[in-house]
Image (cartoon, rainbow, N blue to C red; front, side, top):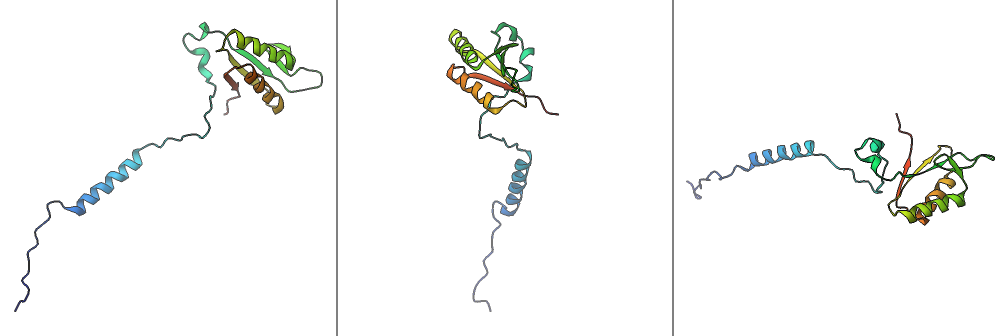
Length: 142
């Protein structure tokens, strides 16, 4: 004797278990194949080694190259090209170069044993001279 008649269940229109399986496989596939971009917190304008090889690179005005050597008692610290200069002369040269052309590029080359004080002073001089395109070159690692 059956007091409650059994109701026949109808099959659902969409099979949910296989849909979940397909979605998990797609999610794993997207996670494995996607690339994550590493956004640095500090934006740096690193020097490009191939600048001299670019087409038309020789047409632009050459940059102002400042070399900062290791400080000794007799040798000067700053050089513009191969000419030794004092810090006051360096600031005057940077200001005159910035006054002639606002887009003057400044290249800082510092010896690895150079004092950080001299490098910071040269960067301060560049800021005072309104030189905004400043590149500092370093030795490329192995």
